[in-house]
Length: 346
Ligand code: SF4
Image 1 (tube, rainbow, N blue to C red):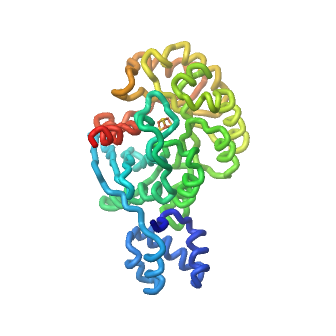
Image 2 (image 1 turned 120 degrees about the vertical axis):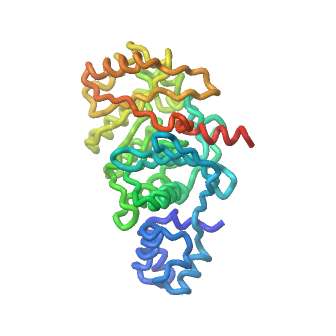
């Protein structure tokens, strides 16, 4: 297979142009065709010579995402199941907010992290996506939005997979997304979410970006977190917190903690009080997520009153907290559910 053109940053395309006897600015022209004019055929790049277009066709290809299914929610959320060239399938979601359109992208086919409340991990990890395959999800979403004159205004890396286990591809993807000569997505409008891969939290802290960091914490202590998230045995709770203190000292940027509320498991007042104790005085925000029902697991949903009580306890301790507005609940928008269904049907 040829490499995907979407795998390359602007600087790499400029380098490729030079290596092929062209001036560096040709790389910029290619980047512009791909991300501003959004063509997906080299023959359409009409300000390049025919010879150069042929060379591009010989050496690269575009990522093709084939739409297997699409579900539209009443709230405007659209969830896609896309087929890749090798018969794997991934999910991408477009969420409509009053401030714009947010895209939730996937970084891996499946996931090996094993969070017990998540459908994405049920079949394990199949493979990493390339940077270009992550990029293609946003480009595809943008082309859909182009039809109604709208744009992708924010990106969340919260789909299937653990982005910090596919770190280099994720960082290349981010560099392409934020480039002012391309899609030019504001750094502060991008959030990368990790289950707590400690070495790469340190690495990310040193990247000098303004991209937001979210941590899937889901428990207030080491013991419970290990039960819900096996990754905690590899990177224990306190090590994750230590890496986050480093991140905060280095970047001064607020951290988001994702906390999936699971009925009777981690949603009791004592859990809220313990979490408040851990997060007190930390520059952070807690996002409470009432867990979606995953048929393969036996978890039940937290009652409305328990959700609000949990929020109140955190709030009273001075922890900044919101309850995530559920989107696409009627179309299985939680990560991995659509793909899991698709795999069952095959
Ligand atoms: S929640 Fe995220 S990290 Fe955990 S298993 Fe699912 S996809 Fe992987």
